[in-house]
Amino acid sequence: MLSPEERADLDRELADGFPTARSKSIDALKILQRHRRWVSDEALVDLEAYLGLSRAELDNVATFYNLIFRQPVGRHVILLCDSVSCWICGYEGILEALRERLGIGLGETTPDDRFTLLPMACLGCCDGAPALMIDEDLHRDLRPEGLDELLEAYP
Image (cartoon, rainbow, N blue to C red):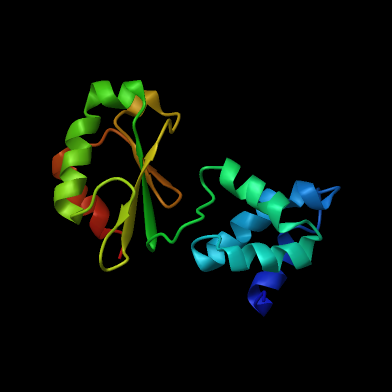
């Protein structure tokens, strides 16, 4: 069931500019993910009733977009760019430093549920490679020795 806060956000953010329920689906999934951290099967049921779309339609949308998480994630999601530019400019060193610092590999979540580390095909900032995003914050021109300070900013 949608919480009052979720319903209020959905009502407010989906009020204008969406001619059909289907056109609201991506934003609705993102809103629920913002509240719940990931989109569970239960969340699809809740949105099914709210939007009037089937669970299958919502699942098709949710599984197509790689930034809709269908599995639990940590409080902060690290998207590590693995594009060609990032590979050339030091991706492997950044990945190894993150593995050592966090004790996890790609696709895993720290035991304290603080971080989930995921690969990202491209963050679109090749001029600042290597790069990663933590939540919605882009970090460019990374060096392994600067990662501890960066991660500390995300409790």
